[in-house]
Image (cartoon, rainbow, N blue to C red; front, side, top):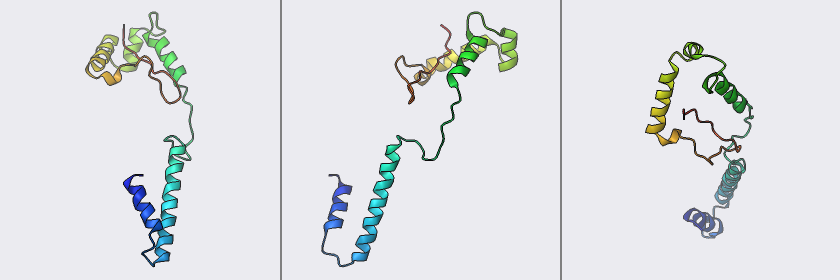
Length: 125
């Protein structure tokens, strides 16, 4: 039992104090706090009342890759420049510099998100 648990236990079962009303109020506060902690962990970090919105991330990624980043893209380099306001080579240089500078942006082979989906790297091989 940790220090907090010991303090709660000694408070609840200590018969030295005559203030039963205060004991009852603290017991209710402890029970309320404990129920809030249990409720928060039950959802695995989700915020109660928030709805999940499927933004079809995989479909949008697939479209972006087929439009601009495959061997035979749907849009040419002129369209890339209009859309992103930079040359494709500059984009790849920035991307590679960021990945080489900070390992956080490198995709881990077996790393998946909370829904079991794999992230998508853009690095040029």
